[in-house]
Amino acid sequence: MSLLLREALLSFRRTPALSVLSVVAIAFSLFTVGLFGLVALNLRQALRGVEERVEVVAFLFRGTAPEAVTLASQDIAQFPEVGDVTFVSEEQALAQARRELVEFKDAYRDLQVNPLPASLAIGLKEGFRDAAHVAAVAERVKGFAFVEDVRYGRDWVERLDQLRSTSTIVGLLIGAAFALVAIVIIGVTIRLTILQRAREIAVMRVVGASNWFVRGPFLLEGIVKGLLGGVLALVLSYVAYALFRGNGSGPLAGLVFFQPLHMLALLVFGVALGLLGSLVSVGRHLQDV
Amino acid sequence: MIRLTRVQKAYPNGAMALRNVSFEVQKGEFVFLTGHSGAGKSTILKLLFAEQRPSSGEVRVANFGVHDMPQSDVPKLRRKLGVVFQDFRLLEDRTATENIAFALEATGARSDTIPARVMRVLTQVGLAAKARAYPRELSGGEQQRVAIARALVNDPVVLLADEPTGNLDERATRGVFQLLREINTAGTTVVMATHDLDLVRQTAYRTIEMRDGGIVFDSAADAAEEP
Image (cartoon, rainbow over all chains, first blue to last red; front, top):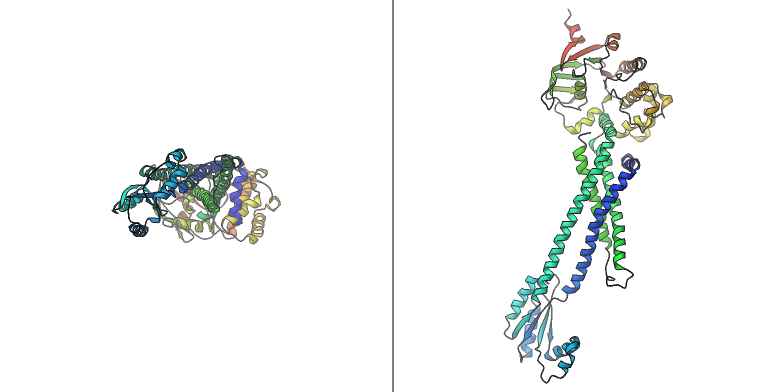
């Protein structure tokens, strides 16, 4: 084991420039993945706030019996998608309108008759706040005789859906592309090390070193480079995060950084890239020397 | 110890490196492989340490069948062999001691046994005083002695030497050859490829002469045919 480590570290000492270059290259690849991860993380955080406001509003016919509404509320609350059902009376609706729509404050104050209908505000459980589920709930609620109309902001629920799937796809694509770049870079640097150490490898082979003994140092080298690259990428990500967040008072003050589990995942990802890059390179080039 | 039976070796371009080569080497023998460059000497040595596989025929070395052994067994065979090359193949950035120790480390020897074993072979090749010298600080003959020490340190049953004196002057050649004879006297089978006919004529060792990938002369076979 000590020999394995010594041989792996020897390559760092012999070719410091090349080793630093490859670590930096890996770091930048992972940094890009990390940056995208931060964007995705914050986007998801922001979306979660928006999502909580996804609700179906059922406007009721004027004069609907309160008992019927209560029964229906209990019924709707039993839908698997539904989180909570709130009855908003005509008076509450007016009070809310006066509170929220400041521009029309005067208009609402002088009214003789309340023009606003009573309604049921139906909140959805997490995981059901997408266009298909919202539409299904709306359709079923529409079936109640006393429901005059159902609104749920179809447009922006659908847009939310798109944003979610687009950000996932773009994230995966960019992540995969940069992971590939990192693998290629690691593979190339390991290949250079292999060529540079062709003599040693030839000697090891001739004296009867096992294949894994010959490969071990290169695989370890890839792992170490991946790990160092991952650490550097985390540092860079934090610097970028700190720069964007500013001093904590700007519009981006609410940005969040990775949880420890995310950081661990990035490091593990770096190690996996390093190992994969060196495995590919060792498999392809070790036969030639 | 070594047996080749109707061995053929074709290069990828179709050229024949070896044609129908058969011979046997007994334990403790010293055998010269001679012939011009390209005659097939090196190819035979490469088959013997499984650097190459025969296209057809059988190659047996120290109870291993090189013609049909799995790749994973190749290291096991090589640990029973010592190989010495014309260009020494020492690692330039390591001392004589480190070069020899490397062969032990690479085959997983216990680290507490390494210094004593290295010193023993260095003494055997007469270089105990230069244990800490780097290859560039040694003469050609001394470098080849370090290479031989490295080949010996795993106690091989067969020592393969491919033109071991090819890069050496006459004096160094005599010294290295004498060392190989001593190793043979101690019981190790030695197969030495060389085109130095003066060296061959000095001794009565068995000689196999190659030409165009075939054996044209084998002193052992000739001796057997005599009445």
